[in-house]
Length: 413
Image (cartoon, rainbow, N blue to C red; front, side, top):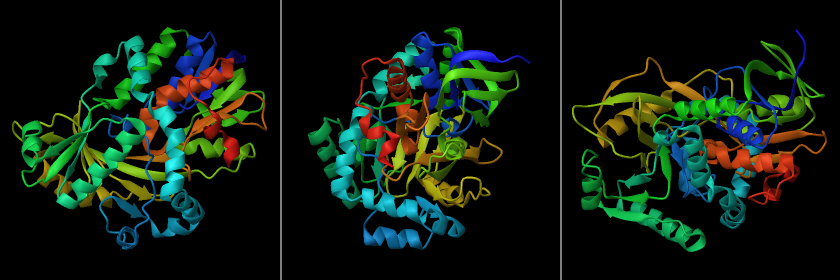
C-alpha cells in the first residue's frame, strides 16, 4: 500500500483526541484520527457524564490522618488499591500528596480554572455544530449528604469556590432535596446542587457524534496502532501507512507508551474505575446525576439506565479487573435510590490518566519538532476535551490562544 499523507495525525479517539481532530480540521488542516477501537470506546465510554463547571479545584489527595488511615485498611467505598501496585506508584503518590497541600492546591486551581471556565461553553458549541445538543442536559448535578457535618463542610467549600471563582451553588435541606428528587432516601440530611454544570445522557454517543462531525468536515478515521508511531511522523493502520508533518499524542492512560519510547519520562499514573447500569424499580425516577458524598460513587441517569460509577482504584493499568469496589457500593446505592436489575452482563472498567500535579499535559513536546501532547486529564477528561482540543489547535496553527497554555506544558516535569 502507498503512504497516505496528511497535515496532522491525532493518536487516540477518546473525547480529547476527537476534539483535537475536530478543531484542527476546522482550521483547514487535513487530519487523520487513529485508534485501535472506534471513537469513544475506552476511557471516554465509562464516566459519570459530568461536564463540571464547578470543578475549579482538581481532585486532591486526602491529607487528613483519619482519612489516610481509613484508606490504609483498603475497605473504603471510595478508594481501593492493589497492594502490589503501591510500591510502584509510591513516587507518584508522594508527589500527588505534596501538590495537594492547601496552599499548593490553591495555586494549581488558579491555572486549572482557566480551562474549567470554558468547559460547558465549548461543549455546547461543539455539540451544536455536530447536531448532538440533545445529548447535553443543562440541568446541573448534586451531592447528597447523610450527616449534617459533611453537608456543612461542603457548603463552606462551595462558598469558597463562589468567592474565588464565582461558582454558583444551591443549598438543599432535607425537605427541598425530597422535592427535587422524591425517590432518594428520605433519611438524607441535605444536598448541594451545582447548576452551571451540564451532564451527558450517553458519553459514547457524544464522542461518536463529534467524530462523525470531524468526518463531515473532511477528516478521516483509521483503525491503527499508535505504538508504531515513528519520527517523520508515520503510523501504521489497517489501511496502510499514514504520514504527516505533525502528530498529537492524545492516548489517555496509554500515552506514556508512546512518549516513553520517544525519550520522555513523564509521571503518569492511572486511577481505575468501574460502572454498571441498572433499571430503576417501578416508577422511580432520577432527574440528575447524584454523588453520594460520603461513599464516593455517582448515580447518573443515562440512556441505558441508571449508571453507578465507582470512585478510584489504585492499580497497574493492565492488572486484572477487581470490581470489589462496585460490589461494596451497590448495596449502599440501593438504599440511596431504588435500583432494579443489573442491565449489563458484567461491570465496565476504565483507566483515568493522572499527573501528580492534577493538571493535564497540553502543548509541544520540545525535544521533537511538531510533536504535541494532550493527555493526563484524570477525572475531567470529558469535561475538558473540547477546550483542550481548541487550545492545542490554536497553538499548532499559531492563533492567539483562548487560555494561557504555559501552566500545562510538559516542561514542568
